[in-house]
Length: 281
Image (cartoon, rainbow, N blue to C red; front, side):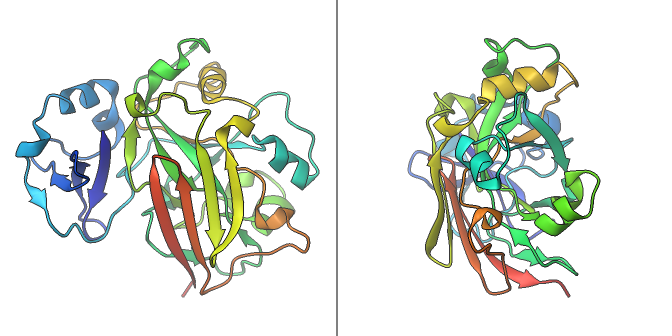
């Protein structure tokens, strides 16, 4: 299933794509896609619905973030071998886990707002993993069974805030609009191998990132299992699994986002995003 949310910001309705790629309205069938609404049990119930009998949405208009909200927005750092190399860092021996503020959540086609005093805003295409059941002390062999689905993420980052201000990375990851997700939450049954997905980002038509998830140092299964040893993962939690090489910080000379730039982001099979960069008021 490909699940989505459509409508004006703050008034989104839940929807689903039918076999012809048309949007069908799930209002009245589900409250929204968040928390228990994307649990494995909730998704199983959705599979029993006759999608063809749902109201057809001729003009869905704006597509919002595929999740209304998230309990936690986790991220994995330096998880692609070539990306670690371009930053000059040693490949990590264990997953580097950090967070984005959940208020960074944004729609896949909404503008990305460069915050005040920003000088080094950067792009990061990533595979997103959405948790579907409580996970604690999960083995690697069992880990993918705890995944509800996958989505495209742009982990927008402000490198000066992240690296040069000291402290934790979350400061450079959390500005409003810095977490576009979607357009779809694609259920796990439609992604048989999350380690075989193309990831791509263009900036003003120039290809900046073009890789695939086979370059990940830690697989999705390893990440979910590893994290479950330190915390309880809950339905609706989202994990951004790292970005490949080609970020602005790694270029020579470095290149950062400016108002008027346009990013297009895609993870194969999970949908494409497009964001225009604007300045904060």
